[in-house]
Image: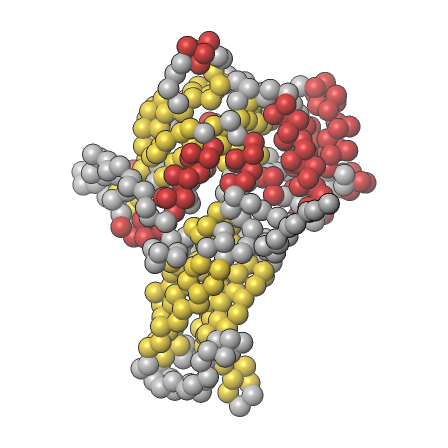
Length: 427
């Protein structure tokens, strides 16, 4: 945004100037030790720029959204603003008391009860005991977990824990509220309460920094939107304008400016993993009769990606190599949300797509193509090759949570799926 005379008279809440964050990547732990002890003059690391010369100005009373794909630097800039991380280069100035809905309950002591944790968390945010006393009733009413507030937090369900953590963070009246996908916690009624509180903050003229893959919320609440990609700020402006550019980035139709820095994102493997959403620590098991390889997702244009626009077609690909003869193998995939709930899935047997036998040494390329109707958010994909031998179910190879996919949506409805309803209202 070009600074106008009006901008010059506005008070600044957050100002980032030339912020860069560089991580040193080592091939093995011994390389890190060699550098730390000065045992060699040789450089044993590669540099990965999570952020590169990012400028960001947020004025008091403004609601600003930050959007971008996974690995764009959104979480990194938020952690620098909140003081969790220090920048490698540049200066960050914050004027106002912050409440950050990033990792809810990160400062909680699981041995303490809910009341004790309210005071502990409030004190960590910089509030006095008297200020917390004044807010206690509204926090308890918002969390609505009843008598459990007097029990140790280690006895809470995950839902109860999140409700209390959210209630503490949002009810202690910060001057600056930072939200990172946190409005999707709890059931639909609690989410409605969270959004209502969010609107109250906006009407009260609080400064809000909002990060979400839910583009409908970005468009609805934000005065201005900043677009990050691979640690570089591509632009900022009106929500619709930046959302349109973001969609171009997702489908590979936006020309990303080159950097003069030869070290910027130079590791091809890191780039490939970030682009395809591959989990290097996925759980795997099986008899070994088959091996799943080369798994990735492509969008409607055939571009390898980990982000799909809701309503558009995408394809899941993987290759299977067989080390044994197998009668009628079954190729499968499932999709879970980040809480581990299986949302949907299918396989070649259900789809009546492949009912043949394979021989040792065969290689099969598997694709599943479908329309993305899940709500906006983060999901995990598992892959499998199974079958039956003498009526006994066999798992030849299974990879759990091996791929991440981000669904980018500008319209989310209730639940997991969009019914794609056509609504007609008449007299």
